[in-house]
Length: 292
Ligand SMILES: [Zn+2]
Image: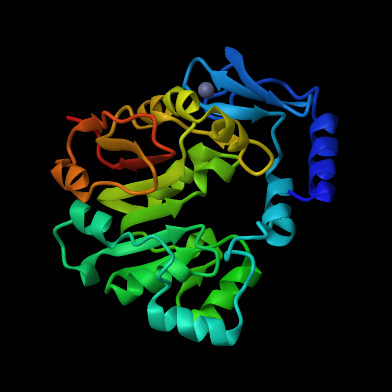
């Protein structure tokens, strides 16, 4: 964050300091303070659902404006849009620095790639959509920021929806990478996934691991990872709670996962990996399938 952004955040937090302390996930009021920053922000953990979240919270209208106009992480390609020449090279090389989801998707599905309909939710200008399409998947994206969506459509020729109602309703997978920790309403996000996924469709979300096991391993990075743009800090406890009626596979690792672990999940049981101190949390669940 720049100094100006930090001051704005502090001002906003101070203005909301008297806000009711209430879990944004379940409305629970049994909350414990597990971390704090800048005197006027706290990380609270909900005893009822397990969601760790920042207090004070941002309102939805403010967040929408923020993601339309102000959001920038200077060093990241997401907001530093490349030149036309750079894009030609990136396309030719198929965005080599980006994580490839191919082996994970293939581990989770036996269908041929062209029959797997996947939406990248929060896709920015669609570089992952392009990468997925290049691997043959039936991929589209959703992005709140209209300028970034328009840029991706123009430069990469990919389909990026900016209206939630336009998202197809027969998705095999709704993928999101480092999106869920930014949202003001996680329940609405999961409801959206339910509405747009097939009966056995997969909700797949990557996010920073807010678990205590990771905190013990890298306390400084754990502390840095929540705050202004990350109001939610998810861990396996919360993931187990939100998908308590559904089959799931919950893993934490350092950005890379063993595809064999994904392939070994039968899609019917609730499985939590044995490694809990990874930097990242990977939630895979079938929100439209109720456990037998
Ligand atoms: Zn809660």
